[in-house]
Image (cartoon, rainbow over all chains, first blue to last red; front, side):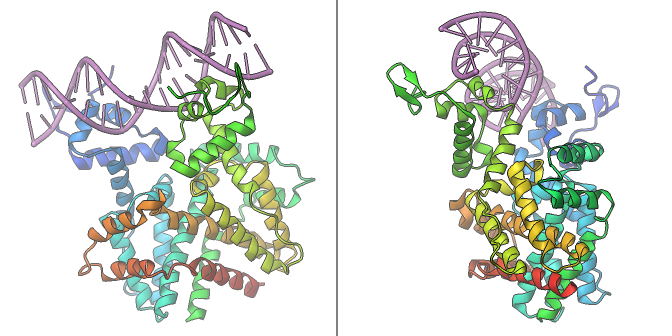
Length: 218
Length: 218
DNA sequence: ACCTGAACACCGTTCAAGT
DNA sequence: ACCTGAACACCGTTCAAGT
């Protein structure tokens, strides 16, 4: 009904679609409604074009999803070369996590699609800092995974109950209602520790634990 | 065409569907073809029933998926009470990982669905071992997440390129073809370290790094 | 109680046709 | 070169009907 209005430009014309526009709209849609809300048809509709117009700029939905993750990788600034290596690793992890917090739909896709060019830059940058950190090569190899797994695992777990953002409390309440404090006291206590805000610094705390472990290992 | 044969029982009758049968078939299907291959229609077809028969035993596809993850949690044996606490934590992490390796489709769902009863038992068991480990309560809280994130994050990352299992080599080859050793030498080297099998012990190595960090923290 | 078929409101993608 | 509509082969789920 209201199709085609947003992209209309001047009477009788409209700005033609391009890859960047399609990508940006897809990211915005995922930010607002999660990955499940992004369908080629709804995306085309929102852009004011017929579905098949998208396929002039993107080979398939899978390719679009891969482009979306790569766009998130592009948002992570390169590690600060002025920092001592392990401090740069730490800051890079925080920056990566920040990008995932902005785009909570990204972590699962990050793991499912092959790295695109931006993500390869992200990899190379982290590997480079680790290489000049003084860690032995094997420890550096493991460190790469330890840091990445923590960033992704933590963010995934954290957002599991939180998307869409507004029903976090609801989902926790539903969960608590299903667990008896008599049979599962520690689980109930653990959830309450989260509700008490204890979770805030947990990401950095475990990150430091990992980084310390790497450094001590050599 | 060949519908309805598997479940046929005796002339004119067949064993009626039940929740356990639906669940087992869904798990088998996911094991064989991944989570994307599981549709209500294909599942019903394989069982030899009309689609809607499934809905007598399962409220929705979402509920079925939640049951599937919980079935994986049920496969993890409880921590060995005879072991020293941190050794039991370690063994429990390895057992959990083993279940994920058997059911590579499970980790993403684990994070997306609210814990069911089996997974709540899994949580309570790990929290109980941590509670009697001598760690202070805050460290125990973080330890719970550190261990879980490692198990899930590592397995997710590992299987990202490996499912379906047989095209691991293909996907790695495709990836390597897209990366230049001139601009991204460390990334290329990192991938080759994986191909050289360096990855095998990496899971336990990083796990120990985390466990050592927890113990040292108190 | 359990199963079924038809129908509804969706998907991604191919293809031939338009400009 | 870019866009379109119709069509194809799928989805999950509601509903009324059968036994």
